[in-house]
Image (cartoon, rainbow, N blue to C red):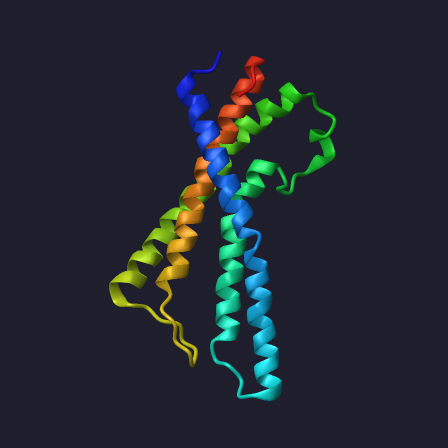
Length: 169
């Protein structure tokens, strides 16, 4: 039997990341619109200075905010040489161990992202391009996304422990 607090945590984090992930899927259409405008403006008008960078920022947001949902769906890349033939319980043991490597990696990313975001906010860092947008919004988005990935990784750990114990959350 898993404690109710862990069940509530898993349900809350999973539902939050599912909603954010499903909404994030539509960012691709915004990015397509920006790139379409870039093509039209270069052909018929003056080229826009902002389109390439906005498309890059949207791609970062799309990739990073989709990360927790990707972890939840188990659609991350996995080396299936041995893993595919293992029992569900053995997979859960392996996943419960390796999730700590993921959390460590995400922790290092968050530390670096936090330092970079703090610098960006403190000094009003701008891109070095002609458009010169401020960089803190995308850096905040990245830090937020990394936090969501850590929360989702913990949720996956709790689900793995439940599978090892033979219960479901």
